[in-house]
Image (cartoon, rainbow, N blue to C red):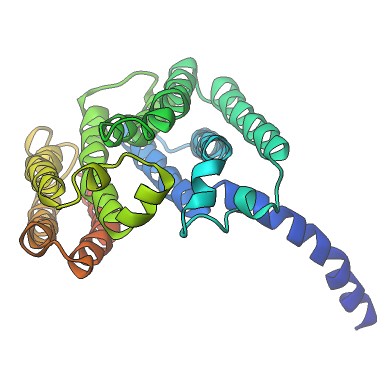
Amino acid sequence: MRQSLEAVETAAPAVSIAQPYLALTKPRIAAMIAVSTAVGYFFGEQGTFAFWPFFHAVFGTTLLSAGSATLNQWYERDIDARMNRTRKRPLPSGSVSPAQALWFGIAISLLGLFELTLFANFLAAGIGFATLAGYLGVYTPLKRISPFCTTIGALPGAAPPLVGYAAARGYLTGEAWILFAILFLWQFPHFHAIALLFREDYQRGGVRMLAVVRPDGKAVGRRILFTLLLLLPVSIAPALVNPAMAGSIYLAAAVVLGCAFFYFGWQVTRQRTHLAAKRLLLASVVYLPLLFGVLLLNRP
């Protein structure tokens, strides 16, 4: 018993040190990236499933996601300090210094690139590097300048299925780009809902989201509906364009999920309330894993 207590006491400081570094990686986003990469890998694989190539593809992409999240927070530490929802993050709160965050983000980003280069292939690593560069070099600084940042940010945000597919097959086909398009369009209602919920916070931080630039909510509502209208035909494309990719069960599920998702987006345009935006955000969180889950289960 005494030895167990001593082991716990010894482990506690290590956990307290590691916790802020884990927070820098944004674990929930990293988990979504890992799932999206896995979906791309499953559709890219040919023949017998091999665990270790799959592991390296998902692990390498997750490391890149963690690195980009860390470096993003390092770059935006002044913004995070001004916003209520982010002021308790490791950098604004002082639990991690800027230099520590910078070197930690660089290290795990490089590890992710090495992982994909050595154990996947150059195409997967190249897409991963382009994703990292686009996220940090274009999207992150653009957030202070223009609401077009959401569109630019959706490009690297939709890349994980491409990395997974490329790692499995070595080249990209139409299937990979369909997965990319689904994830690309999904991000607009998701992130616009977040912007509506935290509009005042984004304004305080100096982030030029569309909800901040056009605070009446009409422009945001139109953007949400437009992308949801595009998402519906794109989401059913796996069953219509390539029957070898998905079956009739997926087709029915995609239509039902797409119509439900559109309904919550339409409610935002009608009501433009905090509650409507919150419901849309919840719908977006439910929609994507359900859609990808049925897509994987209904593969012919």
